[in-house]
Image (cartoon, rainbow, N blue to C red; front, side, top):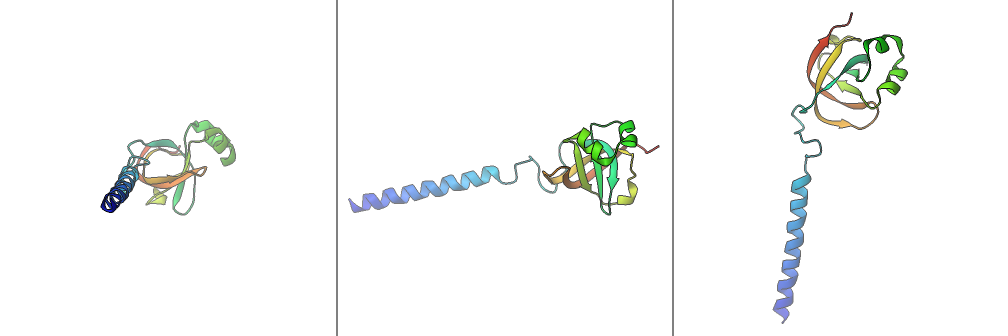
Amino acid sequence: MKSWYIGAIFLFFLSLVGCGSSMNDGSSGSDTGTNEEELWEHSLTGYVADKDDSRILLIGKITKEQLEQMSIQELLETASPEAYWLKVQDIEAFKIGQKLEVWPIGGMMESYPAQGEGGKVIILEERK
């Protein structure tokens, strides 16, 4: 009788360990569906509205006219939630007013504007 209890307890703990490892395998790194070192499947499109030492502020859902006439705060209110601070390799290559298509790398911080790292960048429209 005693060996039956020991066997049942062993199987119980074995099933707990098995369930725990399968839960971890299914959730590791799959929040965005991408590997941290790979480009996102979908791109972000918008205008460069501001920049600092290593990042550009990309704002979507705005027109060229809005970019030229509105303050950054007004643009952020208009574009919500499509505004992104993106760290880029060559900050000098980007000018305020350019329209870009950017594929981020890895995760994106959920602040507003969101923050992340830009990977592949295509200039869709030069600043005039």
